Every structure is written in structure tokens, then in C-alpha cells.
Length: 254
Image (cartoon, rainbow, N blue to C red):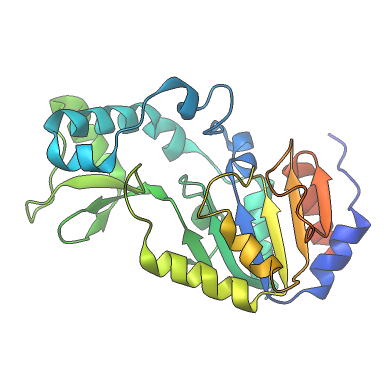
């Protein structure tokens, strides 16, 4: 495989920035084997979601939730970070990351080395299970194994309902996550949107809050995004983010 040469404008923007807000979507994880949620084979097309209120009040809905999570767990468990995940972690190591805000629920930013105090998983994570009563978090593996045998949704030791730590349809986003993302939009000096169609709100409004301050805005995605025609876009690159972002970062911090 021949590596792509670094894009000079992108490398220049990365080199000149010190407080970068990185916003990521499914396009950075597809090379890890995780399907694009809204793509042709994505969950959005093939399965009706379990709404949060249904999960709370219906044992049948809780079974449905856990059946779906069990089906997809091996893919999530065995996925490995892509070059883009690793490049973002390297960007943090270079002291250039204000915050990484991801729409993805695969946990790959953390696995790649992005630190918790620089990461907001705005839609939660499948890499953890959370108790809806006491808030305790745990690894999913034992819960998946127990559900596979019993087909009974797991409960916490405190008696509370356990759920994968993703934000389900109808469930509020975490207020502290929104605050951290908004704060980063007010202090960053460059916004990178990587692998996202920028179509899901309120998450996709985070980059726009920075753009309202005239912060340079770079979008890299294969295919159109809903922000392409925004007047504040500084650089729009159409293509695989794995081919475009890591080489430019390497050139910027070399």
C-alpha cells in the first residue's frame, strides 16, 4: 500500500494550532470492522431502536436491548483502533488537543490512548455497562456471558437495572458532556470534523459553536456532509480520513 502524501494546507493548519477540537463520527471506525450506523448495512437501516422509556418500563424491551447488544458485542470487543484513532492520540501527546468529541460508541478513542479528561463520548459507549440506579460502571463481558446463558437482563448488586452505557433514543445526553463540549468550542483554535456526516444534533452543533467565533474549520469525510455549504468551512477534503489525516498530522508534528 502506497501512503498518501500529506495535504499541505491541512498540515499547515495542524502545525499552527494548539487547542484543537476534534469531532469524530463513524467514518473513522469502519476500517476497524465496525459498520457505519447510518450506512447501507447499518443498524439504522436494519433494526428498530429500543427507546429508553420502553427499556425502563418493559422487561420485553430490556431483553430486546440485550439481545441486540449481545449480537454486536464480539465486533465491539474485538475491534482495534484505526490509524486515525492513533493519530488523534498522537495529536494529544503533542499537546495540541483541547477536546475530542465523538459520536461513536465503540470505545476506540480510549483504546488508542486518548485520555479521559480529553474525551467526550457524546452518545455514550458500548465498552461499559452502567447501573441506572447507583451509576456503577463495569466491563460488559461477564454481563454478556450471563445473558447469553439465561436470556435474563442483568441487574446490579444494588438491584438497579443494568444497561450498556450508550445514550438510547429518548434518553437525555449527559449534561456534563454537553458542558465540556461547549466549553471546548469556546476555547479551541481549530476544529476538525473527521468521518462524520454532521447530520445528528445536538452533537453536530458543537463544531458550529466554534465556527461562530471564526475558528478555522476542517471537514474530512467520504461523501457529503450537512456542513459542506457553511460559510465558515476553511478546508473540505472528500475521501477516506485514514488516507488524509494521519499523513498530514505526521508532517505537522515531525
